[in-house]
Image (cartoon, rainbow, N blue to C red):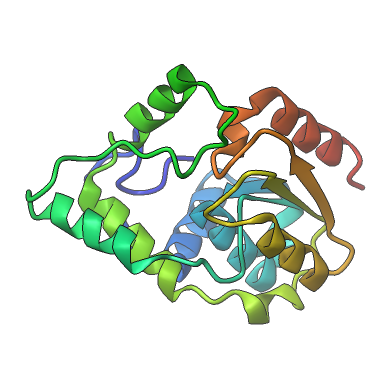
Amino acid sequence: LDLPGHGRSSGIEGLPTVDAYAEFVVRFAAALRLRPFVLVGRSMGAAIAMTIAARRPELLQGLVLACAAARFPIRDENLAVLRDVVRGRLPQQFTTETFSPATGMDLMMEAWTEQVKTDPRVRLTDLLACRAFDGRELLGRIRTPTLVVAGADDQVTPVALAEELARGIRDARLEVIPAAGHQAPFEQAERFNHLVAAFAAGLP
């Protein structure tokens, strides 16, 4: 699912809050008449997923939270740079901070090329939405079987934040993928997909 303003979804406008994105995903699932399903979210997508799990548990069979946190440590410098990009003062800049040092340059460039297809205004709105998000009170309400996946080298949402999630959600399981950063599902796709498939196969 490409969220509004992202990827192949039409339009160039995202939504202002994690709650608004969660409501969109719920409507999307209803339109497709999905039976209880496994919801996988990475980064902001994980914030959206945990919001749905806490508020609409009947929709879900399982929950996978990747490269996630109950509170995202969004830095002022990152917001300032993206604001300058939006205002045309800076070009869109390539950065390695979301990747593991073990990730090859070709893979990093491929991921970055996909990322910059999303309008920087949408990415700025997303960062602000993540900064405003506080999922700590949601964790204790989640009863959906949950897998938390972290990249061992994630600098954006470090493993300690994934551990906090796993402790806060009843019976959640934590898996840490070596040689992966904040883009773990992309950097170590085979390992990530195996974890998700095995988790889904074991659900009641």
